[in-house]
Amino acid sequence: MGQDSDADHIQLDLLDGDTLDPVFAAPIRFEIPSAPGIVGVTLPENTPPLQTGKSYLWFLSVECSEADASRNPIVFGEIERVAASAELTQQLAAAPDNEDYDVYAEFGIIYEMLTSLIEHRSANLAVWQAVLEANELSEVSSEQISILVPDALNSRH
Image (cartoon, rainbow, N blue to C red):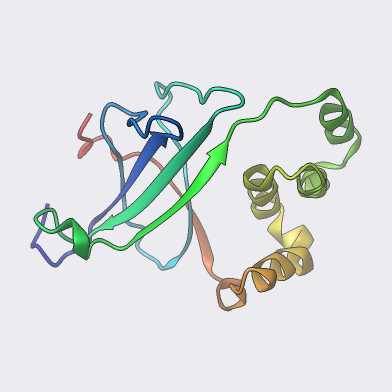
C-alpha cells in the first residue's frame, strides 16, 4: 500500500451474527473509485453463499492506515438471507422489472429493494429521492453509483 495517509482500498469483512467468526478466509478488498459517490459491492464467485435464515454483520472500511486501524472510517450493518416465499415469487413475476423494488419493500427485503431501485433509478427518480430523503441522504441523490469488483491483484486471500 502507499503512504500511511493515502486511502487506496476499501475492505469488506463479514462476520457470523451468532459466533462473530469471520465468514471469509480474509477480508475482501476493493479499489476506491476515482469519483466520489455511492458504492455497491460484488463478491468473488468463489464466496460461499449466505445461509438462509442466518444473520450476518458486515463492515466496510476505507483503508487509510494499515498501521493504525482506528484511522480507517467504517460503516457497518446487519444482513439476513431469507427464503423467497411463494407469494414473493408470484408478486415479483407479476411486477414489471422496473417496479421490483416495490415488491421487495412490501416484504421488508431492503437490500434487494435498494439494488432494484438503483438498477432502475432513472425510471423511478422520485422514489429514489424519497428513499434517500427518508434516510437523511438527500444530498447524495445525484451522486454517481459505482459497483465495486474485488481487487484480485491486491487481495489478501
